[in-house]
Amino acid sequence: MEKNYYNINELAVISGFTTRSLRNFISMGHLKGEKIDGIWQFTPEEIGAFLSNPNVVPGIKSKANAVVYDFMADTEKKTNRICSILDFVMEDDEAGELSEYFCNAMNNCADAVLKYEKHGKNTRIIISGPEDFVMDSINGWYKKE
Image 1 (cartoon, rainbow, N blue to C red):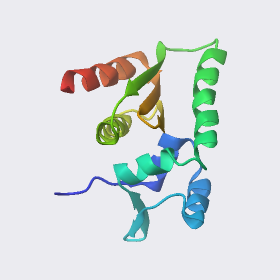
Image 2: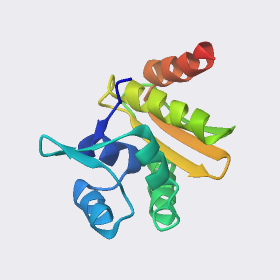
Image 3: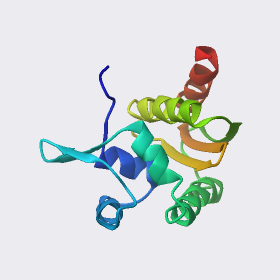
């Protein structure tokens, strides 16, 4: 079975951390991954473990809250946009599928923001972007089930 990998730039988009911060997390042992052809690569499981690490969670929360705050603070949007918060109660394997689904969806829209939080069985997705992209992404998740 072929592994799905995400590079450090994609993880930066997901987490809200800079690539420099992510490299610091690697050095501290909070983020696991492997270098493939000189590029850091991470599996969905490694990303999930990182995003639920107690040393990382406060930073993730502040980044996620900023997405919602920035969305609400922008009173001069030029196009229709949606910011949606989805809360799920699910096991780790399903949370991994959820994370992978939305990470893949993000590859289709450079003008969208995704934040992922995992706390035990509770998983939160915050997605913000053009209305058609956000609606299609959310509907796609529910249709696949």
